[in-house]
Image 1 (cartoon, rainbow, N blue to C red):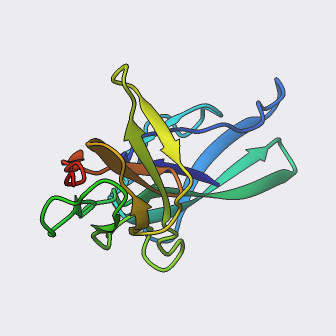
Image 2: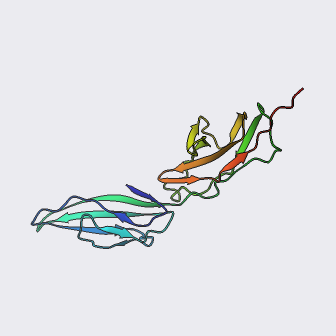
Image 3: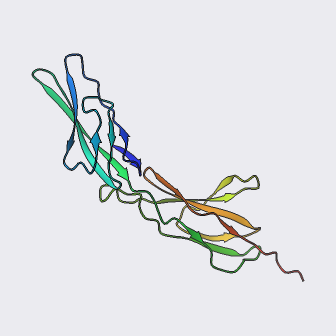
Length: 178
């Protein structure tokens, strides 16, 4: 099985036929836009596979009297979209727990063959401008305790697809003095 994210171009790989044999790629069933560029090359390119679709391929090696074949599935996974994060409350104070809400993403699937399987990770911008992981792996960043102004983002993955949300900066206010 081969899968790409939002790309209908694949490099195929099959056994190389012996000198007295010939190999041939064929499409089994619906092509879904797929075209095999060189049907006799074990390392041919497949192009044009529509997003969110799969195609089944058969590689057959024949000699004068016998043949052997194997099938494989090639899938173009839909890109992940609708990955945004937001915080609608007023600026929090130091030490306050907040929740940053993540949208429900779509995509990251191939029809019913590979339904979406979203995994979430959150990152916080460090003082050098890079990103450090946060331990949260859920859709929303819940009960995060603030200490200073910070910037976060969320990454969503499903199969070969990854989507990075918008960066969100939360301004944290100091506690009032007595």
